[in-house]
Length: 141
Image (cartoon, helix red, strand yellow):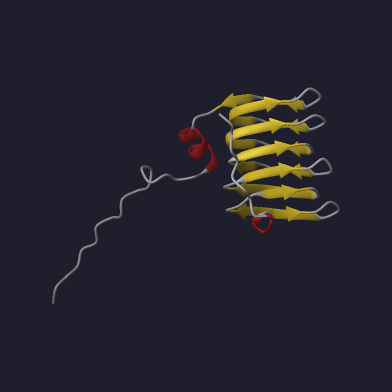
């Protein structure tokens, strides 16, 4: 049976082009491609692609990662981390699945995690973890 992939609208992908330098925090509900330099935290509900010319100094929290560039920070990946030939990672991996090509470099610890562990580590609150609303007293006049 053939594996089908969903089509992605290229206009819904956030992109940091080569030569661009950004410091701060990115929070995105869609896919992100980074080819420039980013310092800070990257958080996406989609896929993060770290291009060959990219350098990221900070943590990445997302659904999936395809990594060709350099990352100096921890990765929290809900599903699959793909370390491509030529990439360099200095940091700890908290992942569900890992694919490593020959020529990829990784310096750190690797821990496989469940979805619940990902939510806890990534600071994502699930409905079961949400605190119930406190009852308020109402006075009738």
